[in-house]
Image (cartoon, rainbow, N blue to C red; front, side, top):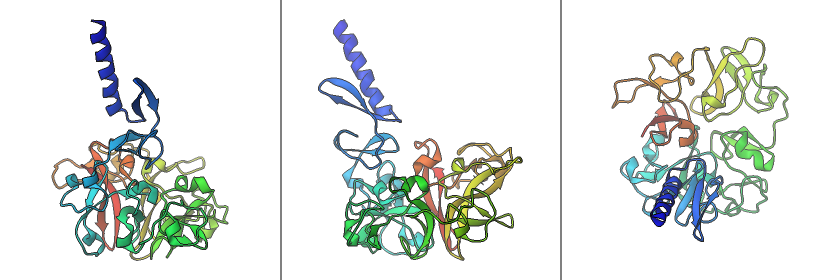
Length: 338
C-alpha cells in the first residue's frame, strides 16, 4: 500500500511538470527538483529536458518536423508557439513557412540560422531563415557585442563594429545598457526599433516634444494634436497612465512613422472605463483596456484584442496567439483566437 501511494505521488509530480507555467521541473537521479525555465531560447539541461525548448517560462517539446522555416499549409502544421506565415502578406513570394513573433533573434532559437526579421513596412519581428531575408551568415554574439563581420552576430547584422538586433522595448536591450530606439535602414530597410545607445534628450513620458531626440526614449509622437514623448510597447498593459494630477489611461497602438511604416508605442488615450482584458466580450473599443474591439470571422461575438510582440502578450497562450495581419500599406501583430 505504501508503495502504491508513493507511486501515485510521483505520478502527480510528473503531471505538475507538464502543467507548470512559471518554470519547469526535471527528474534528476530519482528526485524531482525544480529548475526555473527563464532563459528564452535555452535548450537542453539544465533549463529544460533534452528535446524541449524554454518558451515564455515553460518547457515545450521541440518538434523538428515543425521547425521554423519548414513549409506549412496551416497554423497547426507548425510548433506549439509558431504559426504558418504567408510571404504574400508582405508582397513577397515563395511557399508558406513556419514562423514565430519575436523581439530579437534569440527568440528564434534553437534554429540557429533563423533571425528576427522586420518587413520593409515596419511592425514587429518575425522569425525567418536568415539566408531567405538577406542575412546568409549568422553567428552567436548578441546585440552590443563587438563584431568584425555579420557572421559574428546572432542577428546577422554588424554595424560600426557592433552587433545590432531588433527589440520590442528597453527590456530587450537592458543587458548591454542600450535603449530600444527608432532607427532607419539598420535592422530593416525602413523604420524599425533596434537596440542603440541611449537617446540624448531628457524628455520624460508624455512630456511635450517636437523631435525624437527631445525624448529620453528617442520616440516623439503626435497624441491628440500635440507632440508627446512616449515609449515602445508590446501591449497596453505595458503603458503607464499619463503623469500629472489628472491621469488618463493609455493604450499601445501602431504609430505611423511615414506613409507605409509603423512601430508600436503608448499613444492611445482611453477612458477610465476601458478595463476589459484580451478575450473579454465587448461592444465598443472603449470597453477594452487596449481600445481594440474586434470580431473574428468565425465568431458572432466581438471581443477585446490588442497589439502584441508574442503569444505572451495575449493572455492565455492556450487560446490566443500573436498573429500578423495586413493594415493597409503596413502590417501589424494582434492577438487572435488560436
